[in-house]
Image 1 (cartoon, rainbow, N blue to C red):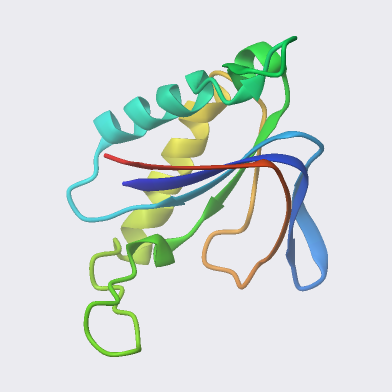
Image 2 (image 1 turned 135 degrees about the vertical axis):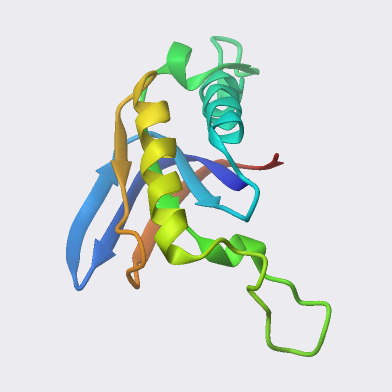
Length: 144
């Protein structure tokens, strides 16, 4: 399981020119799954994400989590996090979990995040237009 996290201001996801998910501040979380992932990885990463101290405290130091700072999470499924570019110029996505299983894991991941904070989502499997105001910029990569 891989996640790419961006601390954000306004962020939204559009599908067919319709906004399907939107936050005013918080985290945008891109998530991808691979074979062998399970509920342990989902639970671990959800807790890790909501407890990451990447929001500023009163002195401007990144010392607060989203739980302390406030905001929402915009969760976006992204199988391309498992792109393998070692051979040639066309990435291989063979390491990404198949759609049938991945959608189930994506739903479980969002349910786990919702135990801690409000979550908006993109649309699994759709071509999405993602707009992000990356604050900092702060971008964190976590793999489990």
